[in-house]
Length: 184
Image 1: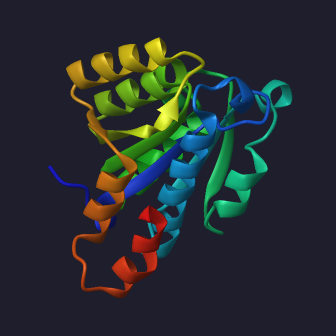
Image 2: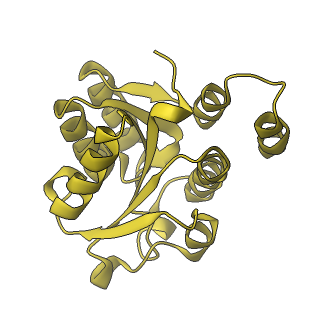
């Protein structure tokens, strides 16, 4: 099944100040999340940002805060799974209720908060797409383990480029002309 911008929402998980320096290939993750955010902004895809215990791990890193669409919603959580944070679960469910049943997930850590959130949102009936080059953990091995488990559970494993090009759908558009330079 292809992603469709008219049926998608983006969940950005825990890109926080005290966590990102320890993340394997963190700069590449941030670059790819920024691309997803630019595409979401251009295509009108709603964005929800989670912050795991921000008192301890800090807020979302400034470059990501600056890239957020103006209508993005940032919500704190203490549970590893975003589904177990009522405000996040309610927002995602409300968006799903308006026809946005494709949940595109990026962020950290792949084997903890991303994994638990993706699995539990999948169990609520959402189609979950985890963006491989926009997720990471402190260890590459943890990312590989998360990938295997998510695929086995029926989540989709995609790349940033796959997600954005599927959202756009075709080349002969103003959206394509605006977003294609992000991949050069």
